[in-house]
Amino acid sequence: MPAYRVYRDGKDVEDLADIRHLWRDDHAAFLTSCNLSIDQVMIEEKIPQLHLIDEVAWPSQYVSNIFCLPTGIFHGPQVVSMCPVPKSLLIKVIEITSRFPRLHGAPLHVGDPAAIGIANLRDVDWGKQNTVGDNQVPAFWAFGITAQAVDFKIGIPEMITHNRGTCSLLIFRSVTRLRLDPRYGGPMIRLGSQSVSAGI
Image 1: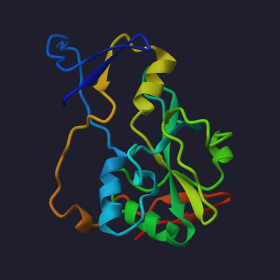
Image 2: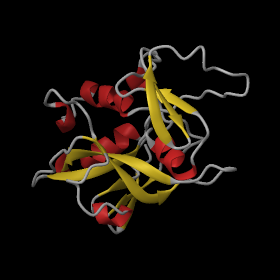
Image 3: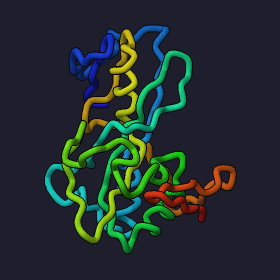
Image 4: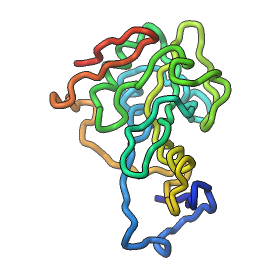
């Protein structure tokens, strides 16, 4: 990747272009998905991507009251990204994104932000503020910055992530033709006080 951010004890301390001198045998590396994978699918399906219409192409990102399943020392809140979705296309968006559970997947929540602990959509934690129009609904997806939110909570001695906007790129052949893996089934999506099956 072209740029990295180094965190120590829950604080970001430096940005680097090369981290080979920091790598140790006890480090472990893993990849998390990004909204960009679903953005591309949505563009190919001709779904308006309202957060991409200006020069600052970032979804709004918030710390939610949804907590990750604890594993060992790791515990903390789920960070979510929000994109405004036209109400008339909401079910289509859920159906399309639920086909990709190993990429970004379906939204975790749709509708009232307060239900997941977001008091005001104007108060973003990361990214930019994206306005939700009268004929739109806010849809919230799991977001990769969750790793940083967990680090801020527990203070990992050392963590290295990609720097903002610098991602690893994995190419899947005919990504929009992938089928939902039947082992995963259709996720349940919260629509305000209702739940609907987004299975294909």
